[in-house]
Image 1 (cartoon, rainbow, N blue to C red):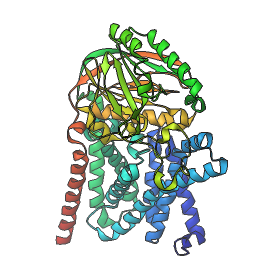
Image 2 (cartoon, helix red, strand yellow; image 1 turned 60 degrees about the vertical axis):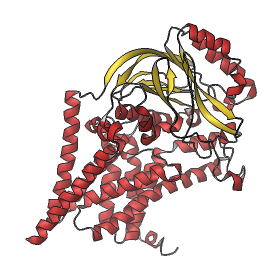
Image 3 (cartoon, rainbow, N blue to C red; image 1 turned 120 degrees about the vertical axis):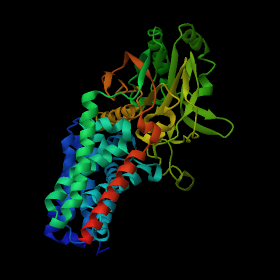
Image 4 (cartoon, helix red, strand yellow; image 1 turned 180 degrees about the vertical axis):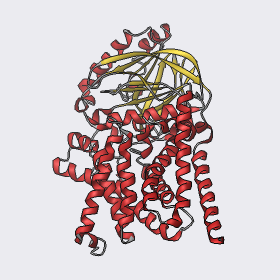
Length: 510
């Protein structure tokens, strides 16, 4: 342990470690609500430069960790809002849990630093910028998949306002992340490169030029990957219930009455969407009660889609679900649950010890894979609940059978923090990747409609009880990303490995 923390005894190391924290923290300005994409350079270029200053593999890992502390400390600070306001654990423990979470995320950056330092020595055929980008991409992929994953603040999400955003339908968020990492590590690597390293770095530079050039070309020519079909008049109902009141027994009837009343005012809409668990009664408790309301919806040719908790009496499991009724049908059970919010990990061993929120939601079970899409009249609807929209592979798996996407959420947990706006930004990428409209209905906001190009066409203000009515369009066809997944980014990586390997062989023969 003493050896692990030994670098902290040196002033030089502490100075560089602090620089890493600042460089990582400044990257928060690259994401929503700021969306100043060049700011992502501070963490990526800072990481590249700090690696050049490290004297050992251990130092490289610590410098990567420092970038992560700043990056996630600033970027996911909204976690603290949720735990402090609703976690029932007090201020001190809320700070500790938040710091522990940020520390865990930062270990992936530490792993990237360590692997880079090792690979610099053992892979002389590859440029340093390529090693940095590929290694970081690998650890980001790990972070997004291990233990249900946390695919938040991927570097590619900072590219929404840049030409690289146009690459989303081709290679998805992983192509954008790789392109972003390569773009901001190449300048530092070129500046620090020795004479015999220039040729390899130039291959990385050419890849960057190709990626940005393709993005500019697609942007200028307004290339469309799908064809617009039907127009659907859609209404989102935003109840704006306070999180600490949402699950109160006395609130359930009042809440349901409001949503029904707001819907009755918009029966001229083809589709009405209520947020995640807008109905706090269980499905079997209200199914019969809502049959007269369903009849009214069918008479007006209106589909209602709402979030509702579901209890399966056969296996005694609860599900966070979405229900289509009226002139539509289907139930969807959430597949990706939020640890501690919707289920308690290792609950059989720790009981309620780790149940931070003490809510009915904390006993949900995950739904099966390969669930069919919902039906809204003749249209197929791929539905996702809250956090699920951040999983590109999950969204991609349901797109081919859908005409548009919906995501229902309750971001009331995160108050007036970066969380809801970052969540909305991620949904924009799912729309761009898949060539489908994304309709986002939330309890406290931000409710919005996103077109198939990833642009927000209508948006409701936060923390207001309101409705939002706007048209959406169905689309036909699939994007290259939906068709081929990550094949594009994998092919690009293999091609760069081949070209740099050939460059190295040519150099050894001279």
